[in-house]
Length: 145
Image (cartoon, rainbow, N blue to C red; front, side):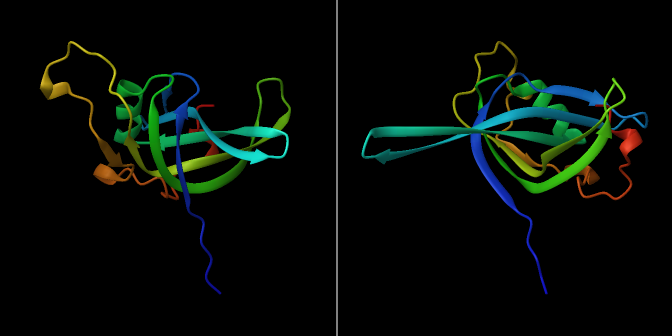
């Protein structure tokens, strides 16, 4: 039986992205993304915001770190992944993340004095340049957080 693990999100960054590098030199970018939904009830308008942990690998991670800022709207395509890790205090923790396959920058580009050669790219696939987030060679030891 086939299965599907596909997530499509459009939301706004909750804080500036953080870029780190694995011991092998591979870039990984993480950021939180807020999505909101609104609906009407008998008592008025209701709203709920959901926060998603986003992970971007490779050259795409470097682009996100360079061009994304808190509040920027983005489209994210990826898969849900859950993993466990040992926190600095020695406790075992669990986290659910969206590992991206595609990120596209939306909304208003931030004001910049950079030359057009360094202009904000419209979007990219996380797998550009062979940096596939699905790579089985990524181990827990490589994840710098």
